[in-house]
Amino acid sequence: MKRMLPCQQTRSAIRRLGAEPVKAQANLKLEDPRILYFPVRHKEALHWDVSVVIGMRGAGKSLWTAALNNPGIRTIMAREWGVDLWNHLDVHVAFGQDLSEGGFPASSTLEELWRVMPSLDPVVLWKTVLFKRVVEEMGSCEAFMALTSWRARVEWVRDQVEISNGLLQRFDQEWSRRGRKLLVVWDALDLLADDWNRMRLLARGALRFTQTLRMTTSMRGKLFLRPDMYEDDDLWTFADSSKLKQSRVELSWSSVDLYGLLLQRLINDPDHGAEIRAGLGMPDGDPDPVRGYGLPGDFRTEERVNEAIHAMAGAYMGSNRRRGNTHTWIPNHLADAKGRVSPRSLLLAMGAAARVTGERFPAHPQPLHYEAIRTGVATASETRVDELAEDYPWIKPLVEALSGLLVPCPAEELTSRWDGTTLQRMKKAGKLPPRRFTSDPVRAGNPMALIDDLEELAVLWRISDGRINIPDIFRIQTGMKRKGGVPPVQ
Image (cartoon, rainbow, N blue to C red; front, side, top):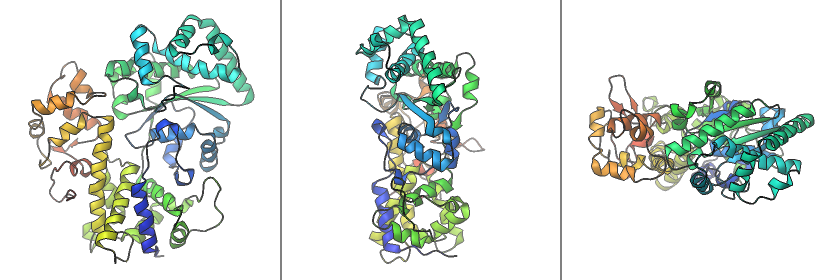
């Protein structure tokens, strides 16, 4: 059955998504639960026993940290994913984007601890972070509770091994008796330090401590890692690390889930949700007071998603099928070099497409015009490069130096663009520098190592003949060219 969406109303709702896309969850604050989407493949990543979760920028690491930290959202997760455990789960964030220092030390405090206690075992640090939560839960250990600085707390736990271990054991037994679990979560680990050696040491300590927690009945740890951190072999130089590494799960988004997120938001639009639900043929009963309208299960299939996107934007990216199927064209052109798409990129692209359709094609009979979608993809490219530069500031000088480059091209053509001035800008960018270029024992300082650093982050890839290609999501914003590719925004 061919669906018909109300044109102007749907266009208006999609345009709003571009203005209010998925945001990183700073300070552990969670957005409106009515527009949260629960991909089935993320259920495994959030499982109690999965200790290592990998996610690119925008995949949902901080969002799920905030969700896990919210008892109300855990209840929704338990219901929608059919996992009763989340109804009996307590969560403690051991590190993240929250700056209050209530539950864990901020990065500036960690830097100070490192300065005054250079020989501190990071496992003791993370044990202290958990111990503070435990004594608060147990209402015990007045000597520890009287301490007001993280340095004093760390020193106390370091010196009172028997007492601290005994109380953690009592907590484990008590929580087991109550049928409850405690999950300790680490997020935003790039904020631990601004150099690889110190960040690596602190993150490795968290992994080692997570191994220790696996020996308890009621406590586990979960680390959300960036791909470049996971791929850092030096992070895993401790006994039995392979057991953690091999059980990792990646936060990834299929095209069905990306469009599911889009539809979840549209059907809960405050102005036009009812009309959009009717256009999609969804039942319009009473909404959940917290969750709003949930996306029906049949809209999590390729067939129904394809139908919905065709109703929204037409079947093809032009007048016929030779221009590409709209449903597949959009994620293909938003993907990085490993085929991954950020949910934020999709929402930004669609929002921009709705705006441009209203400005350039106001009489178009569907909410989105295909030419406006092309412009939307170019707009998303601009934002994606800026987002990546927030996590990896050293990337921007490198890709900006490639303006006008025609890809695919030989690797030497890329590196010839990275002159001394570009490399100096890259080195001064701050935050964690490119890992191989900075610390590889053989190739440190060699621009060819930067290609591997960028390939690891899926900014580029090597095609079968050895040449380098760059996907549209990074190519367009910086003015690189590709025959037949989407042109940059004018």
